[in-house]
Length: 95
Image (cartoon, rainbow, N blue to C red):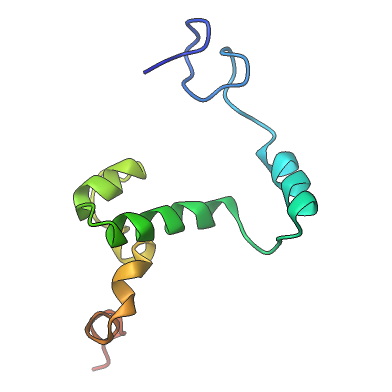
C-alpha cells in the first residue's frame, strides 16, 4: 500500500498519525452543503448497497468494508432488501 513519507499509515494527513478530526471536518462539510442528518457510517452502508447493485460478490463486498465474515451482511446490504422476497425472508420470525 502507498504510504506518505514511509510512515506506518495508509490514511494519514502527515504520514505519522492516522487521520483525525473527522467530526470537525464533517460538521464543516454539512454547513457548506446544507445536508445534515447523516453519519459517516451511512457511507459504509451506501457503499455496500451499491456494490450489491453493481454485481460485486457478497464476500468481496464484505472484505472491502473490512468484515472478515458474513455476520454483518444482513444489516449492511440494504440493496438486497428491495425485493418482496428479500423483505419477506428478512422479516422477524414469530413462533
